[in-house]
Length: 264
Image (spheres, rainbow, N blue to C red):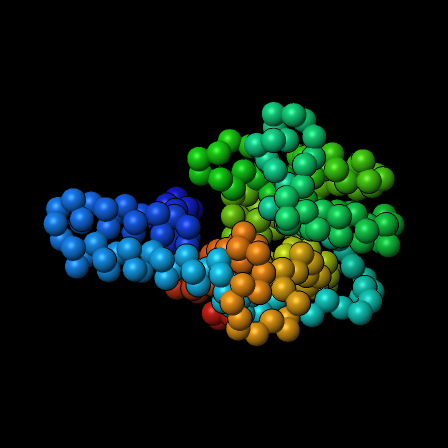
């Protein structure tokens, strides 16, 4: 139930969809001659779009997420395995064409391959199923495995977890698969903005994880500004930031994590 509620709620809350719905509500209000209500709805829609696409608000809201965990200077000793979370591959395209097309989060898989080369013999766990409610696609664990093999990682080192639909299930199903003990340490590879929630969930599932953030979307030095980035990237940053903060809040309220902004 939590999964379906989160997906449906996000359809209405992401900035672009929210703006379209508000504009539609304004049009309906105008047809009903509710001019004040129409003006309010259109004004809020324009404000959401301007702030999301024409300002650096998205980057500023991403900063505390991306800065929360620093990448280690060197790989710690005694790593039992590398866990890389899905979300970096185009599932629908890969299912149709059989490849391993990457999206903007593809750094996760590339970094996992680089780490696997630095840690020969260590298993690589690819965790990620179909996370979309409406779009059918190949699980990231499947296409990610093809990519890692193509990049030279031995197939017998790869462990697939392809059932999970969200980060909570990533942690739960990976735990069921690996049965980690308290003495083992695991590298956790995911996007920097996603690391606080991911690390907290895996720790609560019983993993001693070393955070290895990748896929940074900001420099960390942005200040507030207008038109400081192209509109598509700024809108994407705002959308990511809002989704991640909502996810943290929802997981905290559900008791799945122990703080709103988990730290190292």
